[in-house]
Length: 255
Length: 258
Image (cartoon, rainbow over all chains, first blue to last red):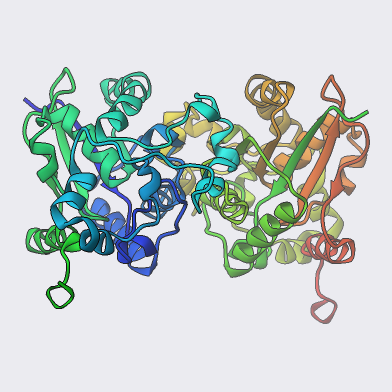
C-alpha cells in the first residue's frame, strides 16, 4: 500500500537534446522548448495541488533551472553532483545519429541504455574535459576532483547516487516530506531501477521523456508499490517517448 | 587586516519600491527594473571575480529570485541557497502597503524618515482586518513557528536585529569563520540592522544609512567578525550615489503638490 509519493522529473529539453548529442556533464542551458516544458510541469503540479517541501537537483544548471521554473514559492533546493546525468566519457558531445551510421543503431542503443556498459573515459585532450573539471562546482563536492568519474555505466551512476538517496533524500521522504527530484534521463532511470526493482536486462527498455512528471508511489520501506506513472496527456507522452527512442535511428535516406 | 569578506545585497526593485509603499513581509515579485538590477549585480560580481560558497536569503520571493538571478549570471546556480524569516524585512505593522509620500503629506517628511530609518521608533501594529494580514500570514511562516501575533506586530529596527542575531550567530557566522564567502540577499532594514551590528554604528547614526536596491555591499571583517572599515558599495560610484538619493527621496513630498 502506498505510503509516500515521490516526483521525479527529467529536466526540460536543452540544445543538445535536440541535436541528439551526448550532453552528460556539459552544462547546457534549457532551450525554449525546455523552458516551456518546465512551465507546463509547474502548471500541472498546481492543478494537481502538489506542494513540495524539498527539491533535489543535480549541479547541472538545466536541472536547477527546471526546478526554479516549477517552484513558485520558496522551497529549499539542494543540489548534488550525485544526481548528475550519467558521465558518457569520450562520447560527450558526439551525435548519436552519426555514431549509429558508424557503429550501428543497436550499438548506440546499448551505449545509451544498457546497465553495465562503460564508455571509454574522457581524457584531458577531450574538447569538453577542461570545461567540466575546471569548474568550481566540482572542487566543493563530497569527493575529490581526481576521484570524480571520467566515464560511467548506468550501474556506476546508481553506485554514486545511492549513498545520496540513502543519506539525504530517503530520510526526508520517511519524515513525510513531499519531495521532487529534478534530475536527468539516466540518473532518474538508475533510481527507478533501484526503487522498482527493474532487472539489468529490462532497464534498457525504459525511456524517460524530457519535461514529463513521473510519479512513484512507495511503501513504508520506500519500495515502489507499482510501476512509475507519467502524469499528463498519455498520448502526447507516448509520442514523446517514441521521439526519444527514435533519436538513434539512422534516417532511411542516409543508409 | 581583512580576514573575511561578506557580501550583503538589498534585493532588486519590486513594484512597491517604485510606488514608494511599505513592503515589509508582503510577497511582491521583482519588477522588470528589479530583474535587471539583479542581473547587473551578478555581472558586476562576475567582473570582480567573486566566487561564493553560500547564499542566505529571507523568505519572500523577490529575495530568492534576486539570489537566483545573480547565481545565473555567475554560472553558479548549483550554489546552496538557504532562506530564513530571520532575514526578513522590518515588520511595519499597520503601515504595510501605505505610500510614504502620502504619509509625508499627512505627517511630514522628517516623521516618515524617522519611521523608516530610526532604531527605536515603533509604528502602530496591524490587525487581522488589515488588507495585507492574510497575505503575510502565509503557510511558510507557520512551518517555521512564526505566530500570527508576531506577524501582526510592528517592529523597531532594534527588534529586527534581535531576531536576526541568533541566525547570524548560529548559521551565518560559523560559515564565514570556516572561510566561506557568503552572500546575504535581504532587505534594506534587515541589511541595515546587520551592518549596524558588524560596523558598530550608533543608534543615532543608523538613521543616515541608506542602502540602494541591487547594489552589492562589501564588508571586510577581522578574525572576530568585526568590520575593519565602513561598508563599500561595489560598482559605478556615481550611479550608486544617484540610486541612494532615489531611495532617500522616496519619503519626500514632491514640490508641485505642496
